[in-house]
Image (cartoon, rainbow, N blue to C red):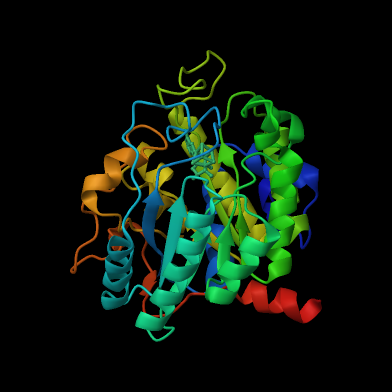
Length: 362
Ligand code: 5AD
Ligand code: SF4
């Protein structure tokens, strides 16, 4: 007689109660979930880990998310913006090391100077690498026009985490003002998809006030939105933020870590051929966190290429690692002994089959 979990894993489609059961399976059963997710990953997208060289362009942010160390009101960090030469140098390092692609991330800024400059950088990087280096942007909420300009300049993937797909939870972890509207964020995600980007989203796991039902609904949200890429990570308190003090009912970090592994496994089992990031936040809690996420179905890592002297300024959460993790002998910083059977996907954009499949359905 198969256990509850193994009969759920045999199903073709999963409803909300199945997702909740997977999220809440026992510690003894969890490896079954993880193994299934890894097998689905191998079958639908292969046993490769793709690299996105991460360039943290600027920590100047107009928003004030209650959880984030880079928020506008945190005056304890030194603000910085990389020069264009620094961005291009980091991109060329990614190209030279055969990463295949980069991701440019930044605090949110919609000024004309910022928008124009990103457009120029995207064009320059495409030109300098003969179109060989893929470009993902993660630059927050922008206008339809801005998303279009950056797309036409040559960016082809965009990540905008919904952070929490429940409106009420979203409102509890953001200031109550127009700048932090749940519906505006949702609209942006739709516009990104309509513009033609491979579209990524995700949530934080273990936010204060978050329940298992919220997490199950996050999975359903991502499935219904038909995303191409997913980035999820555990919430980690940052002491210079309003949510920086661990409340008595918050989960422990290790519980958030384990729950994130389950979320990764479940989204892999349900969406099959999307790209899923093994986030740096996982590595913050556990030195082998990214490898463990890969063993549970993830297939992308984002080694940090931001020049070392700026990194202290991009502490979204405390304890964020990443100093000199990239070098020529181990460009991903990953320990492959922790994930037998995996290989590094180099010199390729590492696009998802999901994106092409989604377009052919439209
Ligand atoms: N803990 C974990 N992740 C965080 N992020 C922001 N603050 C935190 C935190 N305290 C994540 C958000 C954001 C991404 C850039 O970093 O999901 O989208
Ligand atoms: Fe700014 Fe993003 Fe941090 Fe919010 S999560 S404060 S938008 S950098």
